[in-house]
Image (cartoon, rainbow, N blue to C red; front, side, top):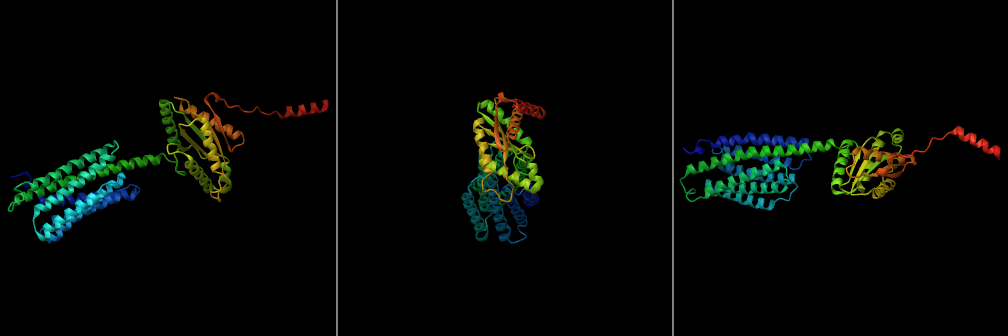
Length: 413
């Protein structure tokens, strides 16, 4: 007896039902918790449609064939379309939906004809196996194109390619001379069982790979959110300092300049004390939004403390960074800003990194430049280079000596 005669076709179909239901529930749960993940809801709907499809095929013989066969296959076709749409939505790819729709229409027409008009099983098997092969192949192509060295996606694409070949093999075997001859029920049973095994393995593997793919995306999202400041949405202190270390290393390799701006909101404590914490948070967000509108896409901004930010300007000299700093200050004085918030001015310390310079030295020099800008009356910017590490502070004023000198001058007169 052939190995596929040992397996029960209805049992295979019944096994697809709980698998499809579990993956649908898991994907819907991911979508509810992380609604920003593209494609999860669409793929979940696809797995949902495979649940009644498997149940209707398993009930074949107990209910009219028009419902069990045509209904089940049309639901399966729609499920494939939704899963494919979910994949291209997740990848943000164009996809080949017109091809999928055309092949789906052909497969649906063949299933309806060879069920309602001419009740022949093998053409239906060929139609559905061919449709599955095309859609799985298109899924694999899109994932291969957009994998970008991500191993779960690469493995997912390889898995889909294998099952596209298997589905195509079923269609080829069904079309082999002599298989379609009347009076070959064993061939029908073998092909149905083989198709059931392939579909069951595909359902299990695709659901697992989809879950792993979305789990990796969730992990990246959590890591990204861990690098953001809660109030302003910009990078937090750890993230911006790590970015500075990476940029200094890259600058040392490429011998391109990189400048650092240490920015402080003037009298921020007074803003909080006078107008309240909400207005203070609004001022922080206004500063970040204004800075972001001027920066290039590869420049970085991060919040170091309550009222202090750091901006990284790769491939910018210290002199040009001073120009950027003046743009920040000027933009905060535009009349287009909200009228219900207090006036905001900035003190900015600017420095240019040297090659292979420790991050701590860069931060210390930028902080010195910021102190000098603050001591010069605020609402300004100061540039310091490596050879200007020492901050020149004015000598303390001796009031008694000044009074004595004034008295001596009067006596002389």
